[in-house]
Amino acid sequence: MKLYADSANVETVVPLLLDGLIRGVTTNPSIIARDGVTRNDLARLYDEFSAAGADEIFMQATGGSREDLLADSFRIADFGDRIVVKVPATPDGFRVARELQRRDVPVLLTAVYSLAQATYASAIGVEYIAPYFGRLVDSGEDGLAKVSNMTKVLASTRTKVLVASVRSPNAAATLALNGVGHITADVPVLLAMMVDPVTEQSAAEFERVAAQSSTDPVDSIG
Ligand code: G3P
Image (tube, rainbow, N blue to C red; front, top):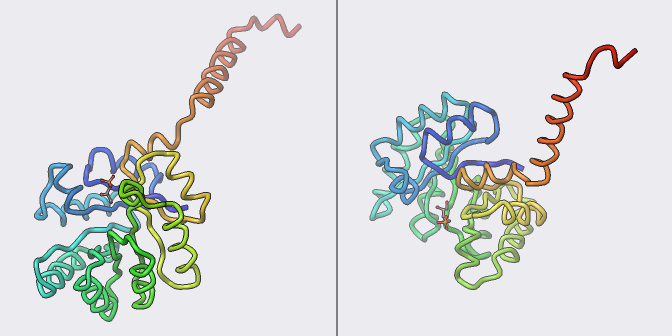
């Protein structure tokens, strides 16, 4: 399993990177806005995430036309060799993704909702697709079945399924159980994945016992 932080928040993401707990970082225009940064901050974010050890940094191109989308993709690709350019899986996005592939720019088609889109993405050889699990479920779909099918269809291709909109540790675990190998989630979800109340109790008990035995009188050994 490869885990990524879906965040543009340097304060919360960099410690996870420095501790080696995530593989990289994913962002999109909504996340950028939510975390109080702008398009103009993307190059700086790339540098900070990269310096902290991110192997892959996903940043999304925007543009009202195919030409603008392609131009923004090249701007983002220039940040460095850890960039994967995200492009929405629209008809223009597919064309831009193909052009980026031709020029050896790693690309992820994002907001993939159908098996047909996933199939097409693999046909043009993009590195990743990102289905939005939580939003699939919100829209009344069987999100798990859909993402599992995408994983099956792409299994023998070079295209990997990086599932986004994963909003709970349980969702992440269920996706893993169903063959998903790449997940991006907001930092609180990632942190919560490491916590179980019973583990916390056991750890507290270990500490209690260890503290007690270190204060036991030496002569009790005989
Ligand atoms: O990367 C996908 C993410 O931005 C969407 O997540 O939870 O708003 O559906 P969510």
